[in-house]
Image (cartoon, rainbow, N blue to C red; front, side):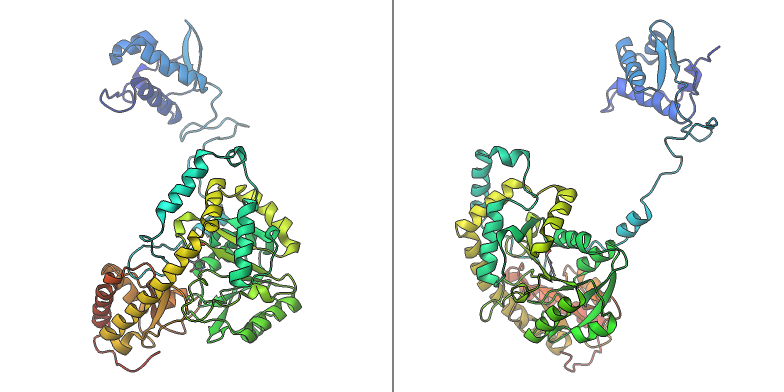
Length: 502
Ligand SMILES: Cc1ncc(COP(=O)(O)O)c(C=O)c1O
């Protein structure tokens, strides 16, 4: 004889009339929970709906609705008039309910976690950007021409092409690829056909695609030391073995790299404005790098993230333009010239890799959002982007001058800063051996973002200092933030000597 369930259910069936959850959902969840945790065993008969409704002081319909849901989901069986029974077909899902031989458990008692690979990826540093003085890499956000951007977006949304609403090209919206190819040819001396351009959601995705297409687990890759942590993280995530190669005044030291690992599969570099040190790779190094790639059968990944901001002379040509052997994967981003939240970037891939990149791109996220790309074509075509970059270039040069003056006035040689001809941040050098991470932490507590130079090293840090982004800091905020930072440094190093450390 099936046992009655009323006594087993009584403690679980506490319904709350003022809770946001409808009463029939509360009853459903309570019974479902009692089944899943083993209080109601298979074969147990549920109370009759009429009796339960009376007991709970709810309408019979409310109880029937809960029972119907339990029936529909397979927790209970039964026929009209014959009552409802906890299903015998449930697998042994709960602690205490033993699986019968041959029966597998659907829900495991322990909460399952990620795979070993997933756990490794989850353990990688995700980084974090806060828009405050002196966050590196954050552009001026207030002065972006949002009215123009909004108007162009609205125009595209008002009359969307059907094609935009149902899909897109994995390479990106073709007119945007064309506009990017034109821009890169004139501004960066990049040599490419529009078919080589792939629109991506920022540098991060470009790195990820490059790693998927080019890296097998265990492949050695050269990374800059110090370098951009997300580059390292993406390559490590793909199973590559990172080989940190020191950066000196001419950029990544190719000869040194060769002595460490001659057979690297990929070299990730930022030749226009090395991140974080800010040096520009010399022509000799560029040629050495391309020669290495040709001879070793490897690829160069060129991260050209902020080359638009050059304050003296014309922007330098990209490394890609020197490549005659299809060895360079060029990556650019709208994060600096527009804003990082836009998540639009682009890559230029060698001819022989186009198909592989497009296939992988389609696999990973199909294609970029179409409407934003179409609005971007208009934004570029109507001259708004070029005008914004021009304005920002002048503004950032002025902010850099203010920052250098403020730091020198307050800290002198204790945080040695030199003006830079490019970029959106400076590196302030601290005396060798300084605990720059502790200072960066204390600065953060004082409301100033100034990441430690040592945190950009994969191995032991060859220099200590702080990164100081100025592009996104309004002029009136620069001197007060420098003063707050100065207090932190003076407190951390009360007796620091004042010798030059640059
Ligand atoms: C070296 C470097 N590359 C690329 C980027 C831009 O990344 P994304 O295009 O993913 O926003 C940054 C931003 O700070 C950077 O510092």
